[in-house]
Length: 306
Length: 197
Image 1 (cartoon, each protein chain N blue to C red):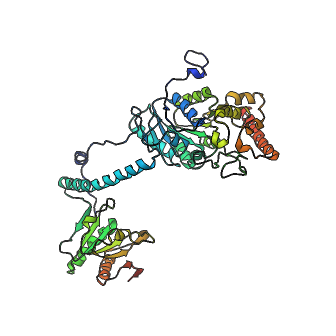
Image 2 (tube, helix red, strand yellow):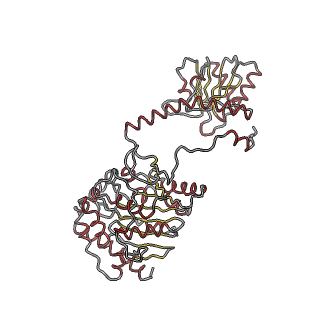
Image 3 (cartoon, rainbow over the protein chains, first blue to last red):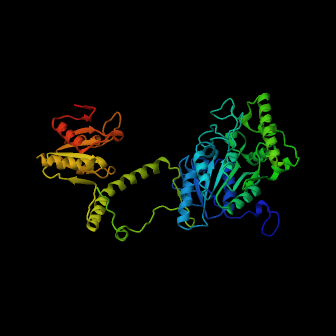
């Protein structure tokens, strides 16, 4: 991305403002905290966070302490988007046009439990940003499967590997014809920052999903969070794009894959994670088949055929 | 019954300025509703109970103040023709309106009966339910326990007859309430009209 001085922006150029304070309760190597830190650097002080049950409800620390330096409303699991509609309505009445309600929810609270509230808020045209930090499971409650858990992955409720495919929430969100949808992941903080900035300048419902590799949940070493995130993109397990008023554009490494760069073998990503340790060759074949199918679909979009 | 809405200017005079205790303010960021560990949780519940205790006095005071300004008073309960009553019917909300008519009818027939309408359920005005004989009509049921208001006041030393009536919106007219009064006088109680003994 390009800074005010017209130069390519690096991590060191991100604002020095910190909205995640010391003393938070995140696990070492937690991707959600990295993601929220960058997100709040982009969105700034005039942000109201709405947080359903999810890891971040714990990360912010226990009463009477908080590690979040923006006003934060904790709300029931299924209710975050509905609460955001309420906050947006109140801000409108108070004529506080420069304050932005932002939902910060996990995949459990987005893909599953909060889906109808999310759909409702999107359809009502609520002026807010909904951010789903997706760690592909209910990590906070001890690693249960969610609608975002990928095929084959171990969780405590899919202990022989998940037999179903994950759903594509961003695509469900796109079907609501909202102004902005984007995907990101923490290995590319500039990309994440830029997408947040772009979303901030827009009006209406905006949705951003951030892949957040969870060390205890995915069973990998806490020092590997960023690598895991990067490899997810390089192997095509995660895709980076943004959709402005219905027009989809791939970004970063995902764009380069569509321009002809080869995807790294998915095995590289799978073998780094204990949650895929039990996979048999035929399971890996099935994962590859699903991945190819997905990328064929992306190719068509990229080529303007879909 | 007609609805009397006071003039807005009078309401504005009466109501204090709106000052929310908790706000989402970017100039003063506060986290609302985060996870509460056991010890502070117990303290919070304790403070809630204390606040409920205090609310009783506040409800009475504000009800009286409202009465002075608007000519109709409200409190924890509303007592209707309870003076020298042998029996007091205890009811809430819509059934209490029917019970008023029933009390008028019964009083005309020479029965010494009154009505106590509960206006607040929490905090519960136990101290106001001190009549010797009470007929409690519950439009509610806690299966395995019984009528909820009945069970709130049971054992306070009064002679209490409990009825369950009107569940799910079954109509309960003043005639039904008169009937329940008659049944209570015979020492009967129960599910009206399904099972009364």
